[in-house]
Length: 73
Length: 140
Image (cartoon, rainbow over all chains, first blue to last red; front, side, top):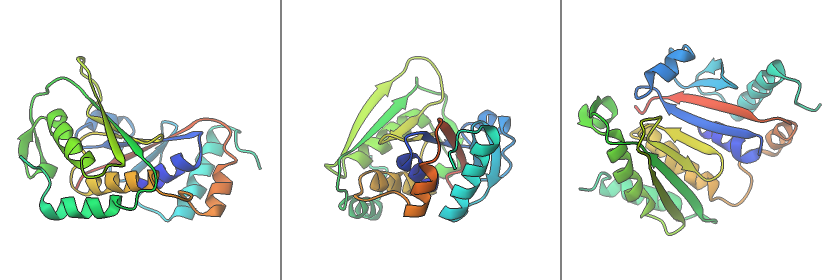
């Protein structure tokens, strides 16, 4: 959750929301959350588990590229 | 009744004593809810909106740099919802381990210096459209 927040602080394009799964089970079910932390980027489930900063950024950028072309090289 | 023990209050105060900037915290609460038994609160039956309000008010009083704005909503929704600084929203009652995350989030928002390493900042700078990250967590 903190890495997602750090990303949100680092880029004005990014917003981060943490959802307490046991209080909002329907929200979590919608994304098929089976384990936490589960990371959903632009409404699509991406990965589960804590990862180091560089891996988090890798996966985030891969997810953004896959759902659009709005990443400059 | 205080929700935080003396050790917890001291721990939060020592993390927040290094805040270089003011940090705004916004709490949105819904109408009084049916109490639910929450594992993270030791199985107690609690109204999460009321509990969040008491907890966040107590937290924010621990630093002059942290200011709280409270919004009460009449209709049911995804509440309680806590917003820290500009970019983080936490939906639910931040209890247990997640309370520490919220305390750290305030520390990051109020810190001098960048939130991430230089290479990460550079790479994230290439994102040219809005991106939402949702993180599903549990408080234990």
